[in-house]
Length: 414
Image 1 (cartoon, helix red, strand yellow):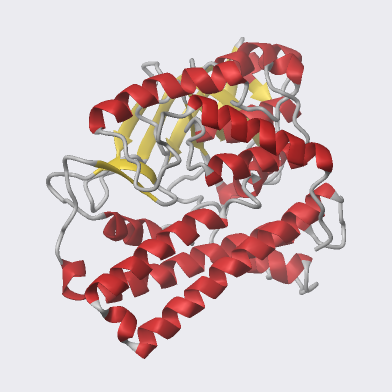
Image 2: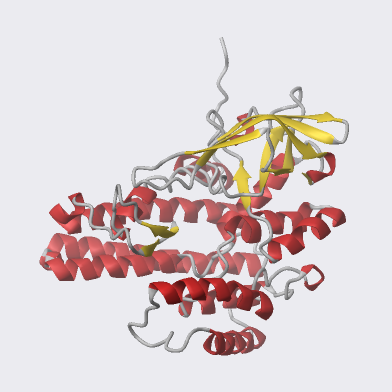
């Protein structure tokens, strides 16, 4: 790493901190501060408006599209200060972090004027239509089709694991628009309205009673012709950009959720005396070391981006980091359940409270299956080596792009 925060970034840090101190509720920075349920509801109503007025929503976007035009280092400092203050940014991951930046990079001027202001103002909710029942890790094998009919695309097929599909107004969806082209070449990236007769959304209930994931069925669904992003049959390149935003937006802050969760696990070990077990202590020390590795790898990634270091291999760093943290999280959650002991087999969550599960977000425990925060995080960690590119796929990227190993041979049909 060879990274220095420039003076202007440090000045910007002071500006952010001052704004947070002026706008967060009185007592926010005091130890043990907690909002009552009624205060929390009021805070959530007012906070997004304050963020918008302050210009902090999508602040890295160009000024002509409603952002502040922040540099990479300023955007990093912004994320760091909000994390330090434990102040929430607006939780529109799909709009702010994925499709918005993708439209900025690939969209037409008309698409930018149509969608970006609505994303900034929170007027439209989004979901992602990539995975299919038979096209998960091998995403280019997708079968959902879009055929042009006059001024509209007609979409038929199915998507799965579509987070927040039941509340979304639009879906950015990958469709096959040329069945004769090689599988990576015949895909287009469409912005399709969700609220129409041709789309059916079925929630997929999880073991803890939550149902944020959905199946989405398209039966002659309609999408405006002009809602292709990046050009017809160029959807694979556009989608890789979207996935890059998904994996690269929290270089110096991504480790913090694991750090905070590990502190809770250590507190539980102290509470029930498991911290006196030398094997548990060793496992906790190992987990702490891995969190520090995440912090350092985040700085390495940021160094590569800021300095445009081709020798670092940003894509390979992203693959390595994703593989590392997702496998770490499964390992540390196994340790958490071990530390909980018999208590870990009992559902101890409080259905009357909404609590934040690291990586998963705010959730209210199901009265039917009242899992605690650690139990919910354990369940969620099972999926993390799959979504966003499986660990096997990440190893292929590292093997082929870093180590120079030959690509796996393609299966030959009889």
